Image: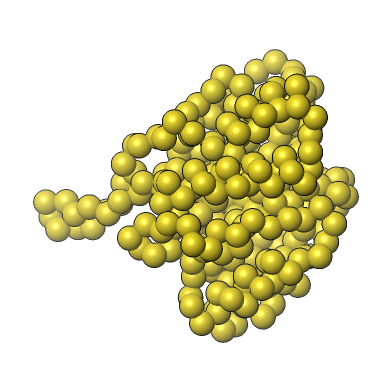
Length: 250
């Protein structure tokens, strides 16, 4: 892909609800083994577009399509996430090329996203490569994570860990005011979820905004957002970006 200095790049990070489990269904084979598969349904809001590329696992730009994280969160079955509906709304409103950098991995706690850990370092590497490899500018990070921290041990530490994570990412990317749009949890252990949500909704760092996923429709597992919910979430994330970080429309 040729150099595109106008490319607007967005980092997609966190755990399974960012990676996308919309449309992932369980089935039983003839040996009575349980498996999961994606139903393949791509709503109109998630359709691919020539102006929406993604950085694949090999650090090359290619046309983005769901499941966006299939080669990143590769140990799990991925489905629809919020990335494509987000990108389609931003592209329609602002124009230009919307580059997506998927980094999310299911079942990961925030301590695994600490500076020096593999997930963190890989995300920073991918972010830097996204700009070096074809030009453009990182506009924001979308972050949806915390279900794995809704535990007796980790919930209390979440706010401090999240703030440190945000500060480290900004420092390592040399983007001190990088917009961060995070998602307050829709699901998790009922005993501890409110503690994590409180931390997410209570972050007071500059250029950090939070959209609330509470009440969005879940899959039958009561943990992952449905395809329909992911479309809504993508649109909420896009509205938050356009409202708070007001890029000029073309």
